[in-house]
Image 1 (cartoon, rainbow over the protein chains, first blue to last red):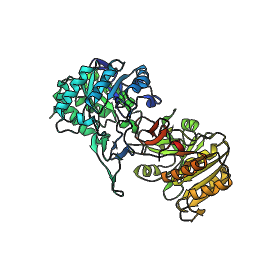
Image 2 (cartoon, chains in turn cyan, blue):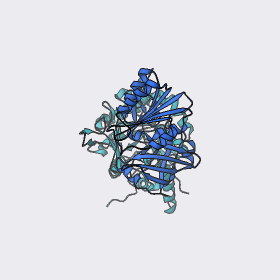
Image 3 (cartoon, chains in turn brown, orange):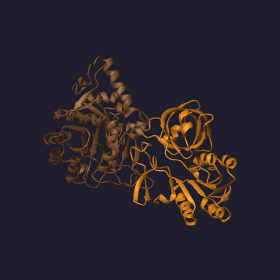
Image 4 (cartoon, one colour):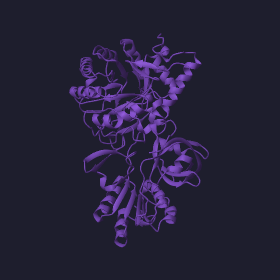
Length: 303
Length: 255
């Protein structure tokens, strides 16, 4: 059987399938359906220094082949995560990735520092949340700001840092390079595309936050393009996400240059999606006589 | 929170009126562990999000659950086109239902498509129940016979008076309270109705439980989109309809 394991910044993943932040909580709910230890990793719900209430509802609306959400980083705060969730998640035998968000630069640094003294395997720096008034995506849309926050967080944390990028920028490659030169160990993308829907009868946006982040299969082609561009531009590992719902999507994303992938919105449609992708990838490798999953990374041949 | 995601078999399909359907679904595990007031999350064709639909009846003997739903959009439209013997991908049972332990006498108050889940309450309540059911008109009136066979007394209210009495469920509630002592009210329906019922219950000091609704994502408590504001001694916060609810103690709900 083909080798599915890989390293990202010295962290070993048993397979390249990670569940995406915000769609999987801290893993407990889905562990009722299958052992989450089967997953390569779990990227936890975005966590901030202090507890956050999140945005008023409605926070979700379905769109053609996708959803818009505006949760607004509701979470119980970093101390609660460390005390109540991290130990349990680590004991399940999967890579625990803390997704870190904040309103200020100091917030990000402080949380990263606190996590240095824990068992968390990796930090995913969320500088791409479109649903909060302060911080979030505002750190992720200029190259200088991305380089600066990456540098600062790297100085304060002993954990590998993966920077999660927003697609809501003009030149994704430039942003990725800035993260790399700031010292990022890896890059993950894409977070959601900012979107909006309006109820034609009430003439009000459906989301109480007015705008939200678009995810799901609708964004997949955009994600593949951006992962391809970023993989060309940097030499650090790239983790691809955005609308992946099948093992074929995962193969496509890896051919574009992703060394691992994240599954988000598809968990809502079919909770077993990540497991089906792992099984499908294994079979694809075996059927094609490929010995190691790493052999397909970035192997799309351009015209 | 034990639950499964499995294929159930549609063994009986009935049309209750022009937009409301009743499905009897055979699924061993869900029917075995479901309790009154819980819901299932149903995959509807190619839709991204499953559609949360409350359980109307639980038949443990025949390994079935009954759901009653209204066609409101593309998802429920797809569901309504399923036929007998079709396999339907459902996840459940989800959420926290109503407390059905013996507790004096219970009053069930349902409005519109909020009526069906209360039938499971009437069937499993260990004490006597009365019911007040509110509908728009005779066309939308459903499940009256079923409630009549399970409850001591059933009052039906329609807004236009074409069936039962004319008026709102709260009109009937005020009248009922003049001659009855209830220990608990269980209610499901439109939010303004639930708020009005809660206020009356609170004024006279009867425990009141309400089943809430909100646009939902995962259905299991992972994505946090179905937020509803609740209060406790620590202040106000956003709870989640799918995992903390759908049934809440009315005094904890911030309307």
